[in-house]
Length: 130
Image 1 (cartoon, rainbow, N blue to C red):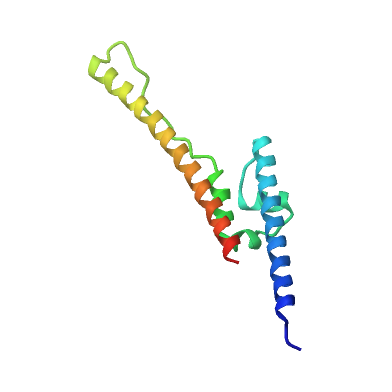
Image 2 (cartoon, rainbow, N blue to C red):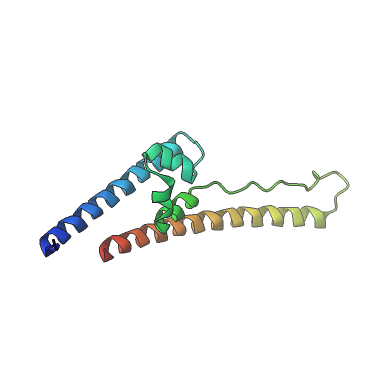
């Protein structure tokens, strides 16, 4: 028995619908986990969305989306506190270092936002190409 074009189109439409439903459930799961301030990992998102981890790993844009929501590792500050004996050079360098740390944090946030946008655009491209 051969498949007709109509049946192939219906199968493709069903596959797109299922794929879109999975994406919607994953988006809702991420929003819920963020609202609860819970850890956002592949496993936690899969469990919350009711999908398998394999279905997430099969779509690179979903993996990128989840990884974009991971918190950045905190950098410990091993610099001893300033004392009255610190000279003005050390104080100025500490101020510059603090400013640079703030700038790095802003750049990491912007990069995370761009990664999220890229992952979303890849998803859209993937949907349109199928």
